Length: 183
Image 1: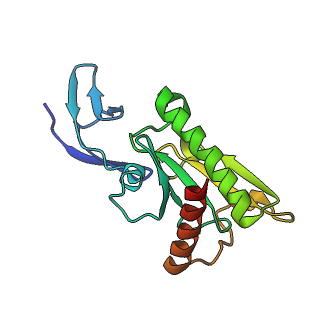
Image 2: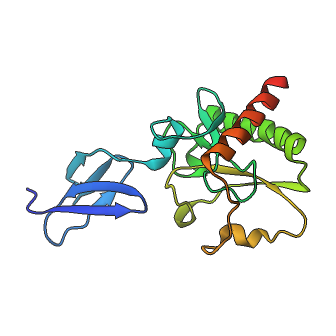
Image 3: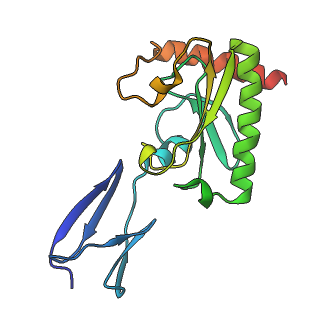
């Protein structure tokens, strides 16, 4: 049956997949298929799922049954928030209607709060899919922006990030939550 045990690492998902010499498994969300016959289910560890379900530390500012919104740990600007579905979804076109609605509701609410608190010149709401998605889990950024900033650096590997420590993130989290609660 399976002669070799191999480990595939795709982005930051860890897949432990046994397969025979010379065979390459077809990867699906929670299973692999060899020669259209053999199928096995294996556990997938997704950082995005862990973050969205608070299994790893995050500074949550808002959540509902479908999404979790928290401060980016390395923000482009103060108030940079990520919106992640709690259920594992990799691509935009895989979102169910309830989750998509929650994401858009969160993006609107957070944009309003960011405008009020940080007085940006604009807000960028964006989502990067495929090989541009470092979490391998759908997520949307809500980023306050200011005149003179080159947003191309947002996508650069060598970008200067806003210096923020855990105390700064906690303070930002509190003021955002207070603002949400006052709406």
